Image (cartoon, rainbow, N blue to C red; front, side, top):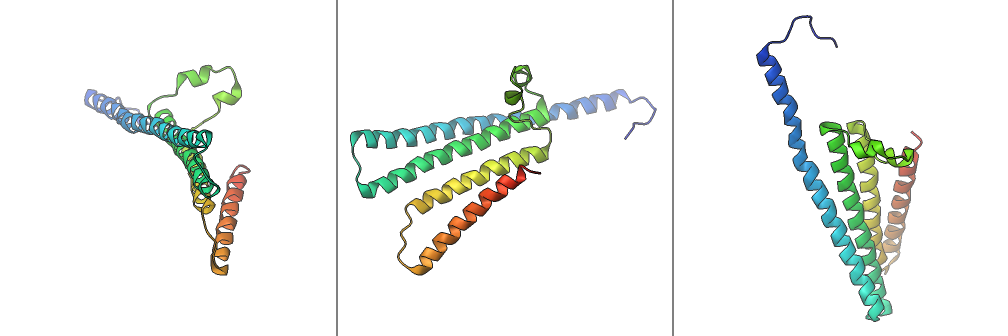
Length: 177
């Protein structure tokens, strides 16, 4: 869409400059998502280290091992949430504020295009993939300690496994499009 041939007034130019500066308000969610990402990484690391400490000290039984596996998977879940927050912060910054210059200076083409986010839709797709994987990990964590005591519970368990497999398959299909 082309602009009319008339010259803009000084008021219009100042107003447009002010509107353009309002994009910097997105620095708040960018910084907070990066802080949240670091927090999730710290919590995940704490969970992993607490399990490792219990294993190295030998303070577990066969029954407790299921609980420990759940904690390990929970730590992975925190890492995935941290990655989702990192992608969100990175993507919003690149979409609204500015391109991240060090990314363009990378020598490796693979690293340079790691999070190549050029539209809101591509950001949503990348976030959706990470969130679905985090949900799969959370479901796996719940299923590790699931006790099957009846045929109905066994069918529900199998249905859950099938839904997780289908979700994973759907994620793989999005790469082809």
